[in-house]
Image 1 (cartoon, rainbow, N blue to C red):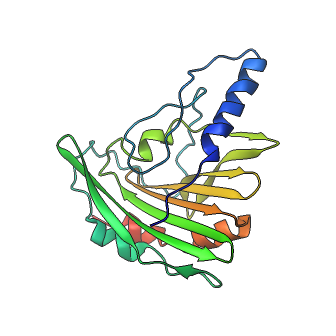
Image 2: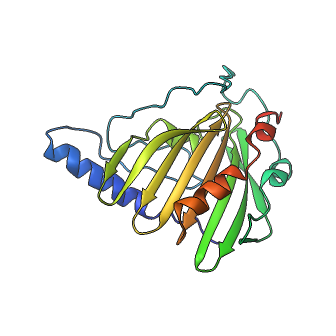
Length: 207
């Protein structure tokens, strides 16, 4: 399995921190973690949280109040390769945080010199993995890239771009599931094709 490589993310946040310092702003100088194995992190500046999008279910469920869906139940929601892409075999895992369990499934894709990864994470309403970083995202744009708040199929999302050709989107589903799509060596159109290939409605109905 190819490693996730949003390697430019810390550099972008470092650049943002420098811009804020130059403007006379202050913030916490920590890094943001983006792998599914991390359980907590903070951003380099005061977080700007996206409001819940229209059509997004706000669960109100207690942290860890449900059992995470097995990774074998997440794997079928990893889409087949879009036109022009090929897909590798999906993989998945269960992870434990103290007495609580959460799960993820992942699949790699390739097209010419580009490659991509889609990850689906079930946090069971816990502050783990990508949810540990969700509220730390800030919106900004520089000459080297951007972070933007968007919506995907009615769900809140974050999108990043880092020159020359690194793209990513996080989609939060029902404050429980997180879908992450990363494209390296591709285009914004490639990112959109992969993001739109995911069945977010089906994921939202998982119990």
